[in-house]
Image (cartoon, rainbow, N blue to C red; front, top):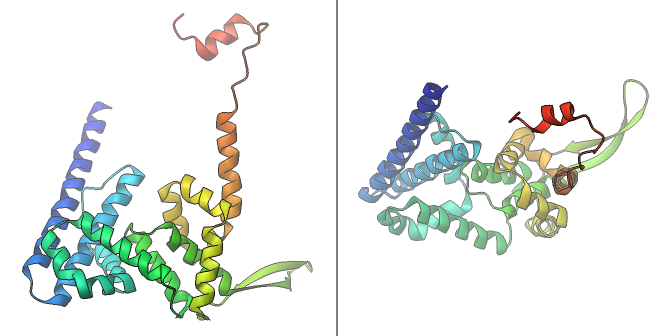
Length: 264
């Protein structure tokens, strides 16, 4: 057992070091190149690897080998976001010279927040969803991003009724991810989601891996069920806060020993 634990710690240590070495190398290449496109790609690679490392830490284990294909895919998604492109235009060289991926991620989040608060542009629902998912995979997503994802699904969905094979009439949700969303309406719906107490509760109490999983599967549609998830989380919190039942005085001593007293 001790050998397995030591091996796991060694693999995890090498994994963390490998990710950090890769991030440092990408930041150095970004600093050394004079080509703006190459600089942006290196910085996006660093953000992608940093996001993968942070997510692995959330899960509880960092693998020893870097997944370069996943890094490339996440990096491509990051480079497609308006916030990253905007940041690179006026601050890419400065951020590359700083050599700090933490500063890079912090500035990217601030730029993304500023652009979102200034109003959302018109995009197809699928484009909005993919943009949010890129941030989720890069570990830069904020509560507003998850709210945008929910809002995009609400505005691109229509509820209706249909007849099931057994003859029953059931409610269905039809999604049109090619629907072009009005930026103003998307901003308003995003605000409604952000101010919903159930949504805030989920953002504060859901595990990061749960948010990650639900934002990426089935186009993130599962996040629309956040009121139900909030009820589940509140029920669990109430259960944990409930005092344990007191031991009955008439309970046999043997039963008490078997359950809680291991010293006899």
